[in-house]
Length: 251
Ligand SMILES: NC(=O)c1ccc[n+]([C@@H]2O[C@H](COP(=O)([O-])OP(=O)(O)OC[C@H]3O[C@@H](n4cnc5c(N)ncnc54)[C@H](OP(=O)(O)O)[C@@H]3O)[C@@H](O)[C@H]2O)c1
Image (cartoon, rainbow, N blue to C red; front, side):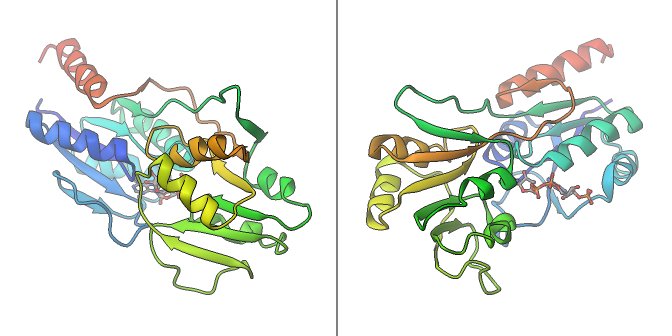
């Protein structure tokens, strides 16, 4: 059977995998949730929008004759990752996750670990500060209970509605970012503290390295848990898995 992959994307890793698959002549489709206005163009066909839960994803894979599923979503896209594991079992489509190792603190880092967004909000229940809030558009409203802070926000798209934070400045930019640029940005806006998800990878690490260089504290949001699954870190690992799968099936 000729492989026909479904890649759950929206990350640099998914784009890198799509490039590697296109180069290797492997058939596949990249799926986006539809959260950003201009997703990065992929060298493979793409589709946009939710599937309708695990059942919807299983149905889609059967209808499209998907042979392999790759969950290359962001480590914080936990619902999609749970659905992927369930749908893979339901539709009997083998699955692998392409994901980035999490960041670990270095000795000079001043991280306060929190379990989730609510934990970060609670950690900001304090006197006014200048906060770089790098959690993405979807979670800004969660921080409304702490309107006393100035928030520096970096978003992929310009906000369409009024911000839920009274004292905020938006910078529209898409990574990867660099440590010197992020350091300059933090100095320019006199940032006191950074709030970040433990995304892993290099593109979003600049703000963590910049905070270290400036001696700034970071409220680090730990990753949500996802079900046990086979995880790899590079597109080459996915290609190797694919060829093992084919060998196992005797193709
Ligand atoms: N969360 C982050 O911090 C973050 C950062 C950068 C990029 N992203 C990317 O943004 C997308 C959404 O992230 P999220 O945190 O909102 O996910 P999520 O909370 O885990 O997913 C919520 C729902 O969105 C749909 N969905 C998510 N990813 C999808 C995909 N790649 N293709 C089709 N449908 C998808 C699914 O809807 P149905 O149940 O209807 O199928 C899913 O149940 C993901 O592709 C992720 O890789 C997320």
